[in-house]
Image 1 (cartoon, rainbow, N blue to C red):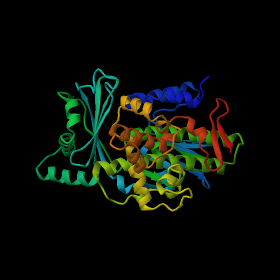
Image 2 (image 1 turned 135 degrees about the vertical axis):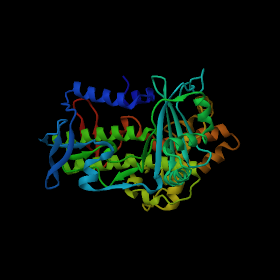
Image 3 (image 1 turned 180 degrees about the vertical axis):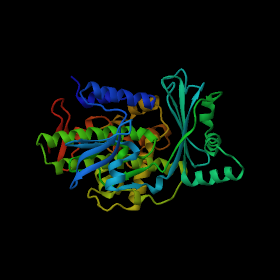
Image 4 (image 1 turned 90 degrees about the vertical axis):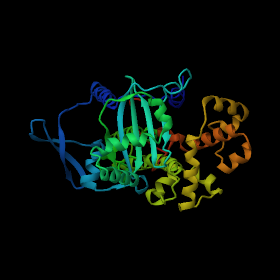
Length: 425
């Protein structure tokens, strides 16, 4: 019988779905699993007893105000983030990821790499003007999701230019014009036609100073969001949801105190966020060739817990200096950006046959300088080893198995069905 981690490793596949349909599936599954679902309501206020939330005031679709009491609160209110923005007031935006996103849906676009095992895979491309990147994601109904991400500074300058030239619908015009800086994406679009309005979101990268407290947990976009890169929002939502369920179950079952349970959730969400943030920042520095300081956006304690395996490699010493320096962060960003090294499944197979120990998930983590020395002029081997090493440093983000293998605040999660909770390490 395969373990949970083995099953996770053998079935790691990504899927493409229309967000509204995906949300509907999750909601109906929760309902059939025993959750009482109330639709057409809007929570307006939360009432407290000291620091503990005890009830919520909500409005019905007919405008009537009602109140409901509860033992535990899980705030999954999305970007609105009722607890973080209205009561804790602890949301902070990432200065180095002040971006604008625009997206729309197209019909009649082409397929990526037809006739290969990568056919119809998503396409991501950095803009030639170094202002951001674009995505091209085929959905199951034949529609293509096409999005544009540009820096806030670039957006402001381009929008002002369009306004000075009398352009009314500047967002749509900017979106179309920005696609011209993604020639590979344009080739995929071909004769496709835009079939929707252009939607936008700005200053969407944020985190919070805490994600849990006495009898409440914050999960998903309600607490933090980084960037559309790697579908980090979905990952953090499921991570936060599972952590909230695990810690609440542990508190109810007496496996720990409520304070200990809240501390685990705070650290788990914070570390998961930091891992993704460092990878995304590394990619953006490559896309924009930027030299701005990003140290102020990194929580040092979460960084240490997220990259404890990588820090000795970066610092080149067995005894790690706990102080995070700009130099170490820059090196880590440079290291993690290689998760997008230009490789293919065939390249991985061929290099693994020649260098099985170095490409093994259990192999050592190598510095980029060591990889260059080992591979010499072999570009394929260099790119594969750079990607493999980058993935080793963050692989614990993926799959349910990491919940049972990582210890935070003296606990790890028990994922056995019927026994969900925390185990003291």
